[in-house]
Image 1 (tube, rainbow, N blue to C red):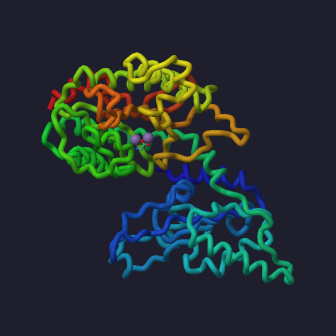
Image 2 (image 1 turned 45 degrees about the horizontal axis):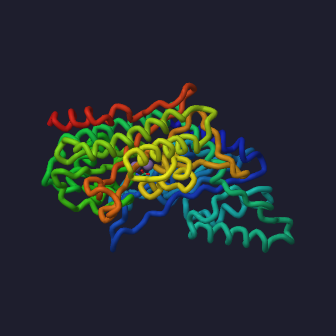
Length: 436
Ligand code: GLY
Ligand code: MN
Ligand code: MN
């Protein structure tokens, strides 16, 4: 990501905060995996959004209008010995020259410097609750200032939740962000195609995960979330992560996996037959999910509200389930009773961005769904899941789970399906699976 993109974001934030106020944005802590091994480090998404700085132990401070510097970065100092063991650090100099901080300080100096920055400000913008250890520090700094009121010093008068402001900025994607997201999607498509070509009876679920992971690593990306590879009835476990069963001929396999490229996440799901050919019964359910997804995507356009695609999905799904005899009664009754939830129990999508379930309000305070606008990105992912032990359903449909998920940009005219290059139609999937 270009540095000027971060500059632009900081300028927008400063404008929203206003002079006389201050914002504190800590990054995520390093998390221990076991003994002396850490999980691969990932910065906090808000912190990354504003700084582009990817090291742990860092804090960004924004003080609009402060003559000596408005953007301060606290981070680790350069330390050749530590760096030869654990990796490079930007240090204070690069925090300024490369990451654009007006000034940079050692992270150890927070306690000495931050109370002075907080004193007598009107508003403190801070996302309380995300990092309890950092919350404690903020409370201690406030306490320090409270004890100095007789010297004319006081803590900020108000604390305002910073998340909410940043969520609104993050919801609308710039051309630079869309370039990263599109790369993440293209890598994910390569991975899914590779998995589809590799798929055959007798392999393990984790082998398909490995095919996708190969394309991610090969192109400088990681999994945006733990991949879900569920063969047969495992596809009915919505957050199935074991991925350790053998794939059987005659079953479908559900593969939900996406790459994260430069901190932007793709989120794509396909469901296909392990042996490369859908049975007629599988095809009936598959085409209902596909029709449902298409109906939802048709409702994505500026001016419609967030719930319109979901309601379109619910209508198409309900009618399809009635037609197949999986639901009974009148269409209106089924909609009113939400009968479809027995087979389609999740919502139709979510915002997509730096976080796979990205930030942004879905409803306004008055309980009204927000309107869709150009530049927002989201997923559309209806599904059908029929329990293996559901004796009320014909046996050829039992234990089938199907989800189809694509990534979408809202444009002036409607929906741009960014992941459209990955086959969705039965005929295209079967052709791809034969081409190995
Ligand atoms: N992969 C998680 C989801 O589809 O929301
Ligand atoms: Mn999703
Ligand atoms: Mn998904």
